[in-house]
Image 1 (cartoon, rainbow, N blue to C red):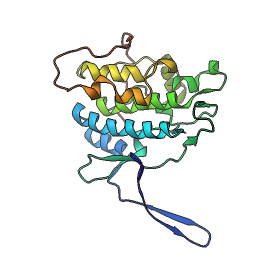
Image 2: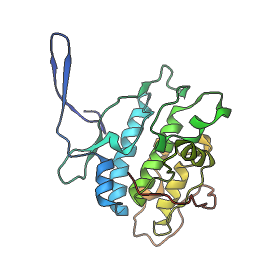
Image 3: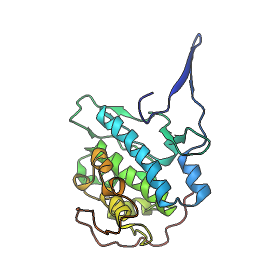
Image 4: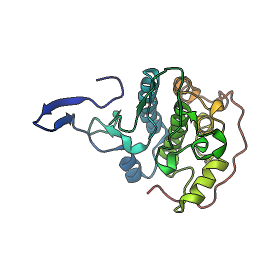
Length: 232
């Protein structure tokens, strides 16, 4: 029952197989966003805080999730206010807590980070930073209702991700736009960590605050990716 992780209800051992039963869930976050098209910012904040807390708990335990995406999170309640990370499938436990460099190319195409796609990283990249890029994709999708980078042709999709150009709707609050940009930064060393993410002003300040600042990071001018289609 670690914070943020789906709880095992029962384990049954057969002669040749092990059966693991989890507590009932009420759908996954990907399907929920599809049904709602996009979420109100207040609802996205509440759910994404739980997502970020689960990822932080994993990173703090030396676990890199690698294949982070909306489908991995499920609702615990029929009101769909509480979510948990459903499984640690595809995750890797670091042998050295301070060394999170990975070499395998793993992840869902829409969520994969630029450095995983780049040939200039010598095949090694920070697993925690790659997870945080995926968190940025998740947050953008919750708020906007589509992926920040999308194309039916994988080669074009990956080219868009490597360029890192995306647009953030002006209808979002300044702090929400700031957080998205702070996670979807091409340089992994410039991204917020999961711990820093939880201290971001979007979480720590009231959404009704009249101040438009609160983001101390240098922000690049938005550049639009043409024809982003809806989440599929």
